[in-house]
Image 1 (cartoon, rainbow, N blue to C red):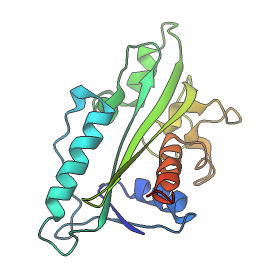
Image 2 (image 1 turned 90 degrees about the vertical axis):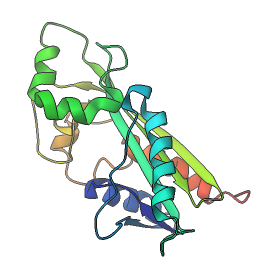
Image 3 (image 1 turned 180 degrees about the vertical axis):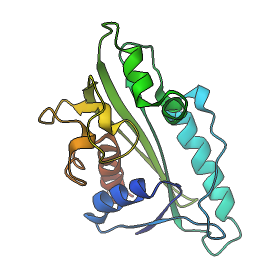
Length: 197
């Protein structure tokens, strides 16, 4: 199946393509008029609500275009710090932009617990059917920014299933099987390839 991923982040397209490609799906970035779509996101309602809002908007965008009837995918993800109640969550990118990774580290510098998890919600819809997958990757926040691989909080996130390095220190692709996004995509692949689909 060809899946149009409605995102402005090419890193997410690459990761989704690597995971879903193993199941025979082809993932391409959705571009409308040559640009990725820009969505209204109800971040205060959480990741799931943002993903649902994005899939509804994506389907609306392709209605009446050459893409109508195509499978469209959206994804929303965030990091959740144990030291704070469900934060930053759906506002992760805003927090990173406003205070940066060093700002996040400063907030944890007073001995707060460093446990954290990445969460992802991915939805595919062709207008007739809808499939969704979620993924979680547990870990902890490092003491310093380490590495320049990946994006977002990767340089300060040490996965529990790793070897002590941050995702930012891992070579590109090495972490694809344990990331929150890969787990959500793997769940989608199971659903899309199900005989009952």
